[in-house]
Length: 479
Ligand code: NAD
Image 1 (cartoon, rainbow, N blue to C red):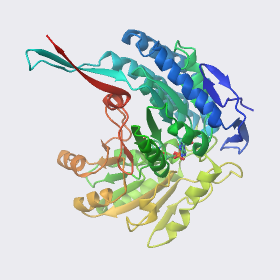
Image 2: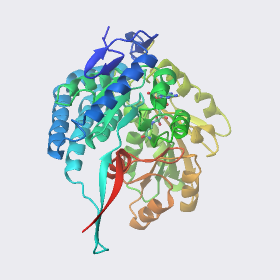
Image 3: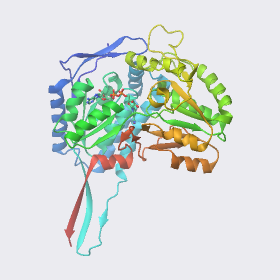
Image 4: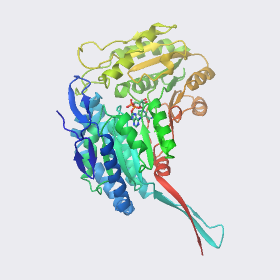
């Protein structure tokens, strides 16, 4: 059984004594590890370690060049351990190895490199309007950040939080999702060896309602960055708000993927497949509501269904696998609960809607496509978070935007058209934090990534992170 600890405090791995939380391999249903819930006492020790490291100032006051070097060393350390981290992530989440090893671990390393570069480029504001005064804005790290991450893409999302918090001189406590803590816990161990002063990055493993809640409430936490479900985000933001702690919320999505009749058909088809079936469909930014214009709808649906049926569902460890198992039994049951909806209110199941053939163990769900008549349907309004596309047909451009925007979420809008005027109109009309025009999933780390409405509050990314993780202090000096 994999051995992972309840906490990493001051660089030391610690076993807790709380109730064991089982960590399950979604492909085999075997228990990979049992990690005692960190609980109140370890939360308090961990936050104390982060606070002490911040107050010592070794990291906070290090030169920018010094911090850049350590962040680059963290990136190298992640790359050196890439195989091991990828094995753990793949076993624990069911994400295909091919997607984890190259893209996601590479992205985790790149998150540290990106912020190393970013802090070397930061500028400052200086005001000289009054000849008798010099006024400028000093930026200072806020202190200790609580970072709470989800199970769907642990190393990519968790590493982004750690890199962005510490780059600006803060200390942090990371709490990975209890279902999928293995790779991220190892990543934290690995970066300890890269020259980070002790206590700058700490880790807590355990349940959200116990360990996570205690962490958010802790008086020595200065800010909270959360990625996860909308209902959890609502709770955490309320708790942070009670204590007047700033928080970033990266929450759920039900993003519209609009395919106009003048799109490059093959490009749009590939984009639609990538948008919904990557990462086993468990992505906040998935293009899960596909809106296709009527004149091309028949051709699109035939091709989309044919390609979805050809997707290789299999063990995440197999290099040829394109879609692996869903992350947990609970999540499998959640995704399955939408299948009866495909036979109601004019909806129609076009493929999938069942356990994937050939598997009697593991949480394998067949790539699924449903044609849906009404955008009010649960299939179009709720986040299914699996390899499950809901397709609607529209007639006019105005109708497409109206459907796209009639959602409580607003994370991403995908648009496919070869007409520049249509693309320009779409990026204005679609109400979402990110708009991808004729491309799926382009992530520019300098640009903000955040959601409108119930998809979130605040954003991650270069300047957005700088604004969140640094206090601004205005200084005036007579001259
Ligand atoms: P979740 O909300 O169940 O859990 C996320 C994290 O919150 C876990 O670490 C959990 O332990 C912790 N938690 C739960 N209750 C808590 C509490 N009361 N106090 C403190 N911590 C608590 O989310 P999930 O199911 O792990 O993740 C899937 C969701 O995340 C989906 O809705 C997805 O869309 C969303 N997501 C959003 C983004 C984004 O950038 N917008 C990215 C990835 C995933």
